[in-house]
Image 1 (cartoon, rainbow, N blue to C red):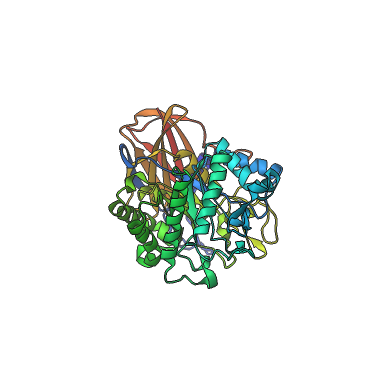
Image 2: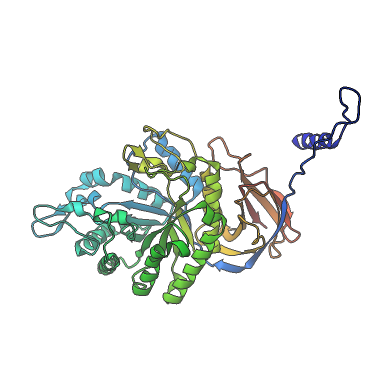
Amino acid sequence: MKMGCRILCVLASAIVFPAFGCNGGSPAATPPVTPTPQPTNIAVVVDTTTKIVPSFTGFGVQWDPYSYPPSGADWTTTLARLSYMRPSFFRMMSSATDYCLGFDEGGTPIYVWQQGDAVARQHLSQVFRMLDYAQANNIPVILGEWAWPSGLATPAASAIAGPDDPRWARIVSDYLHYLITVKGYTVIKYYNLLNEPNGDWMWPNNTVPANAFSLWSTGIENLRADLNSQQLTSVSIIGPDNACFGPLQSDSGNWNWLNQTAQSLPGNIGVWDAHWYAWAADVQSDAVEQTLRAEAGMLSSTDPHAATKPRILGEAGMLDGKNSNDQNPNVQTFQYGVWMADLGAQVARGGWTGASAWDLDDAMHSSGNSLKMWGFWNTYSAPGDPVQGIRPWFYTWSLMSRLFPQGAAIVKTSGGASQTGFRSVASAFTSNAQANTAVMLVNDADTALNVTVTAASLGAGSLTEYRYFATGAPTDSNGLPIPEGGSTKVDFTAGVAVNMASRGVVFLVFHP
């Protein structure tokens, strides 16, 4: 019905009737007709035999203990949404003051679990319930601490003054021993010591000391030694966790933390990690992909074991729209979902193995009198922070999590490189004993596209399509993504046609 109306309208607009002046004179001039721009044609070829990333870590999400913990229906809804999303991993950051009460007169740490189960649960109830979900669903966890616990000073002991203080590494390793060995949370696979050590916001007086790298690297060495002594060799240290805000050309000082760590600590780091809050211009121009590919090459040439280590963005987000209260209202917009899909595509295309979205829920973090608005939703109402349902960008990130899962192979795609804002990325994975190939197409520009996707190795089979556009992104009654129509029979050898209006994302899921 809608297509027919569109055709009739076009035909009507093409018919020109003569127009005459009031005196019956010569015909009036016909205004010029501006032709509608034709979509650009792009041919994408998927080569499932060539692997860019043999084993993908996947797309995860930041899930921290809450400033305002959800309960009842909000907690049930949160878990239901996570179960749909199937994140490949969680990044959970907290503080040593949650589990360590200080030191006794002999300098021995005093832990909450030593005071009995009730005290431990009083202090760690949020951590337990989040780890319970991760353990039940076999979701790997990056556990970590924002900064060294300077607040643990007691009359019997001086304060922990920096990341190099060996007492910090000791209490961290004791905490991990308690959680993994005693409590049985075996999904804790990675540890992140000190968030964004290159940032002045992480140091006293907002000043990065000249020997900051040395202080941090000493802390990493201390932690690795203590974990080994606790028989926790299976826990990998993730780092350097440096914060970046642009490509190499404009942000080389921040990226240099990764280079320094690769040169001096390759034996202590099990997962290479950086944070990137990107500008839209850098995403749309593919500067993210180019930078990550260059840094992957640096790691490969510097770390002799780089091929066996994940390379992830431990925090990923967009800077456009961020305000001085550490909020980004753009998370409420449709466009944020396109940006984050484009950013994720470039992570995989650049040879990195995954990224963690910042973040799950506004209710986790506060800033001044407001919440930090960065989440997929907000389960708590505060002034200026209204309760909302699922925000648009959950649509793209949740499908990326499901369709580019842990262990998938990122396979080569080619075509459309000259088209500004266009990206394609594909994965091959097995789910429920069924082989699948997923293709994500991103149009991060104002040009409409006609895309033909071919894959000689796939042949004929069933195809499911998800579409995320401003004009529509189908969801079920709970706001969760659903396919556009049903499954259809296609032949990828002949090619699959995909129409993309400006600014949008398409997911194709194929199985023989």
